[in-house]
Length: 127
Image (cartoon, rainbow, N blue to C red; front, side):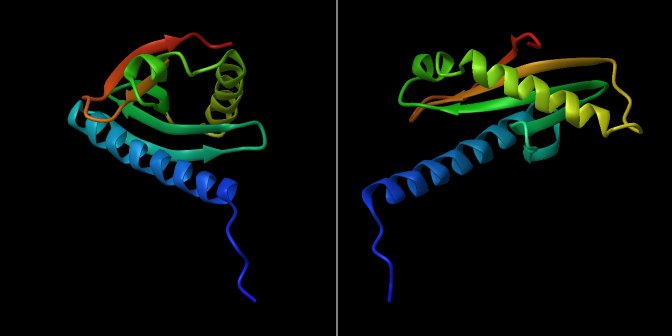
């Protein structure tokens, strides 16, 4: 018997797909800016980082936010999310004994319909 999809299940699937699309857009923009994507959707028991990118000797931990306006996207990153991203970044760094880097940042890429993506470097400090 086929299970009926509830509105909340459909909504979650749609949100997931929009998030994947936003990450593809962010990856494309970052590559144009000279970043190499090291990881996408890096998950641990502590949290998830949407993208980890490197340009030269700089590593960026990037949270991608898609909302109806860039302003809404900018204000959608909570302190709780920042802490989880920071803890996850520390776990990732601990596993990268062979990777050299000189600087790190926590960035965001803001995406809204019919607007150019906005890459904000150093959007927040490690928490």
